[in-house]
Length: 198
Image (cartoon, rainbow, N blue to C red; front, side, top):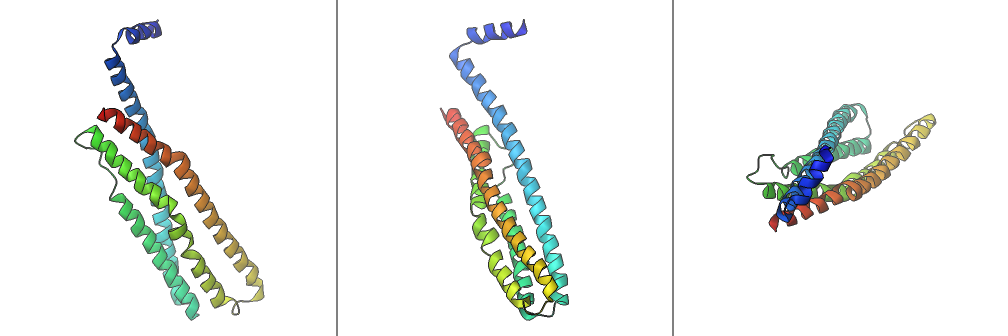
């Protein structure tokens, strides 16, 4: 009964009203989609920042406990990488929009800019997430290879394999996230911006 009445109202409405309805429907869908993505991003930012702070604290402890010079250098470099990661996340926060924009079109444009910054950040994971870590890992291995007991070598090999696995997993996860989550939302934002500008 109600559906029939809605269909009659829809059919009797003018094209201009239909277009307004389609725009508002697109706005609601896009807003919901963007809210889910922003929640995921906040979770990612928080968890990575907590891990980086934890890594710095553990590194400070190890810096004073481990006597080998090259190992201390590797640990100091890990600390620098962790601080750099925190700074990168803070720079991305600058592009985050506020919900109180003067109009919806500006809100969408700022959202698009924020999504593009996130996309670039995730696409460049190789340069800030993998490339700096592997030379540090090699330096660490060289520094302790002849100085640890033979029964710890298996553990060291496991740590290296796990580090490589985490790096590869992060690379492909970020690539997938950009392809399936961020790029489609950028397209939807562009579509809505184009409709609003007409």
